[in-house]
Length: 153
Image (cartoon, rainbow, N blue to C red; front, side, top):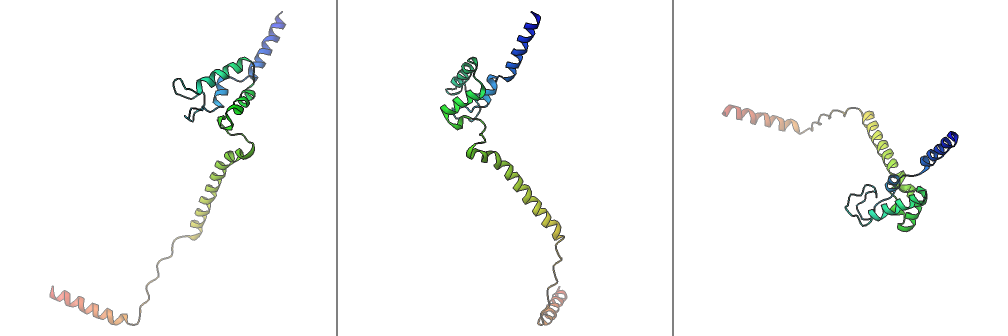
């Protein structure tokens, strides 16, 4: 009798470990009311989309359907947009890859810019302007005019 009870308890524990919870399924689906939240997180009172979806999920779980079967039924009913995370099939893989590719490209760009700054070193000092041949005469006139101004003052 005791061995049978332990075996029954072990079977129930194994079944419960593999079974999906209501919250897990609700988190995997996006509410269709336009809030952009998952069915579980939708905060609209008496939501015309979320409440019926929660009831349908509960009914399907009571019937013993797996999470995959429930998600497939909702995907068939509402389309791919009902899933809160895109699948890895078809064009959806781009939604998974793009953020990582953007971060990698940004990091590469920053590292290239830093390398160029380090290699360039400090900016060279500006070269002294070349003195044109006619500048000597202008400098003398300027010095004379400044001297005249100093005398008048």
